[in-house]
Length: 229
Image (cartoon, rainbow, N blue to C red):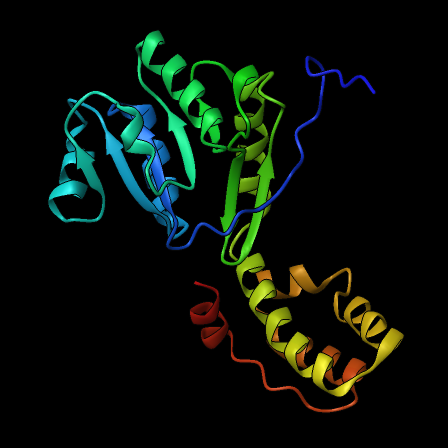
């Protein structure tokens, strides 16, 4: 079997990196963006670079990241889960790619999308809801444009809706069996429920949930905001 590696689609996946060590080689603005994203997802970060941005230096001083103030060496990969190559030196980028592959690690190269084992999509987070856009590295500008549209179209109402569905899901999974669970979830997600949340029509939402579930449902939007944050 022959696999075409020059024209393939990336396999979309969400990674749990909580507590896992990620290497970011480089100390500029691109590296800083990578670091912020990793920290936001609970990852541990090791930065390897002779110099770093003021923001990265501050994070190191606060012991939120490990900063190895030097040029990359193979030993820096020890214990690492993911690798991000974000230096401006081709020889370092190539060494990182070679070493990561030899170690069986996945690498993201800021300078060469076609050489990446994985890419970081443009994302919008609304609580536990994550919307991501990727173009297989063909047009980051297009991905950014679509992300801006998503930021506009998906507001705080989706934070509340996700928190509400999570709470209802626990009860439904406990109380209902088989196909009825799927039907209830579909019925709860009325075509107007997003508008009801956006317009603070919580009485209408409570009436709707009672009609679907056959029992009163207590809904506290302030509590949902806390759960969704």
